[in-house]
Image (cartoon, rainbow, N blue to C red):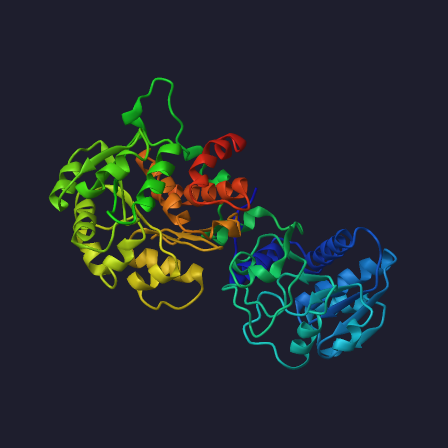
Length: 488
């Protein structure tokens, strides 16, 4: 299964490479339009209905003309509306329009009256300016209740690279794109307009990707399954890693959730360090948790001195005092792998250079949500994908920017977009579980970029398994079932 995501510019390069390899552009357009017609038939349950196809002035419109021809041949009543002048069409789009022998109307909202389906082939992913005039009016008209919408490439009004809605965009039931998805198919707010995504094979060979060098992927087990840690028959607990967590005194639930998740995902041992006032709370939480009371950062450094404690989690519920700050710096200087989350971002707001000097590198995973991200990295601009990538390069660490479209970025420019998380995960403690999952994988020796990707996917899968009504405590308990279901 392919997992590359291509930017708009990369997809243009793919088209050119395919044509240079001897595939005519008209053949690619013919196959694209056929795919659109096929998905329209599927969307309507195979029952012909009146369809309006709105065609734009470029190749997206050409795909629409081809779809019109195939739907008409299948017995559908088709009306085509064109934005702009037919004589102004060029290249393959002009060829597709010539092959359509039916009437071509001026695209207007009135065309949608009585339609049982509208195919939006006005603008593709290359649009970079807000919709206005007749195009805007058409998008607004598509919002009428009960009117199914099928979008070609992306819903019109969507920026293909950053997922921004340029003024307005229809909410499609289905979006049909070609060869590989684009960032907007997975990034919000655009993802909320895409509906069911279909990536159609139009005969472009995968070999063209060699010259493109895509660096963005959708997150999926096939990318990291081979690196997923599994216990050896002859192994012992220390071979499965020893995770170290700093627990807070007041918000003790966060570290306990992280510890539970780390144990469930196979960390051989988990030690939780805390001030003596909280020792009893943690000790009574779970028998398999090792609790070590410490009075200051010196005590935490002593725990770091044991080389078997190979992965550290700092931040969840830890508070923003001197203990957390000194523990973070000591862990970085000790050369450990780890996860930095939650209160860490408040403790080191605007202090990225201090972290770099202490040794922050790609053995560490930062897991901020949007607010936490801004505290450490400031007001970066661009899409979530762009900002995560910039932050990873600037920090030298793996950055997992949490959200419904979680983005995992490596300092070398690789990016994965996780898209299996249900909305039920937007609850207190959910992020603490995610940090614990990543911690367990780091402790077992998994590469940090793969560990962050795996943790994000398992977190989403656990949320799906639990379903509506879940609370954070349910997520670690779902891990064994998720692992079994997915043969991990």
